[in-house]
Length: 275
Image (cartoon, rainbow, N blue to C red; front, side, top):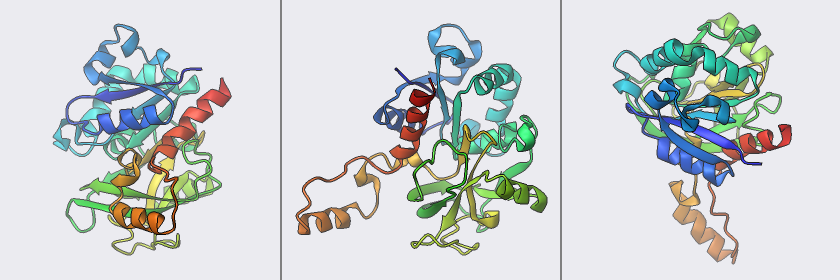
């Protein structure tokens, strides 16, 4: 079957090409559609019913002038909320990356504790060091999480690039997230051990090293790191060293696809297996 993915574009959502490319690599047929066209809802490209996956990518929607992801969340709430909820209840998958994650928590699609969509319970706030950060991080994946996107992945290295990436919530809500296994990924050291808030392993000061969460169904996933930015092995800053190591070991079959694509491939495989 053909798995169709929607990547909203426009007004500073500037990771749309990489996200679209990664989804296509993962086996989906992806469409970049301007947010205004989606809101207008006219035509096949704008109808959410024609898609299985929606990917809200990274960037700086509306320049983050009123806070990261705030205006995007407002546009979605007042123009697309009913259609989005229909999409969710029909079994669709949603991923929010960086700015997309910020929008999903502002919108209340995450964390949806007790399946209460629309209630804002967590926030993504300014990095502890007060600066924009662009670096690579190690991530440990919760094997007990229901998250569709991370199945079979125990550890992954991805890049982060944000000024507001600190995950923050009340202690009681964070406890609920861990109890429900809704904490999908955490910042870690190179061996996969918890960062325990240490910089630079935890790049932004996120409480409990939280880098990504899902809703109770595992079908809505938000994360600050960028899987779409690791779509080819040459995206990694150490690729030349690794490539030389492969040649020295006479390894001729080099995996060209970046590890970040696996997150999208999991989504595509889930849709194929559930239909």
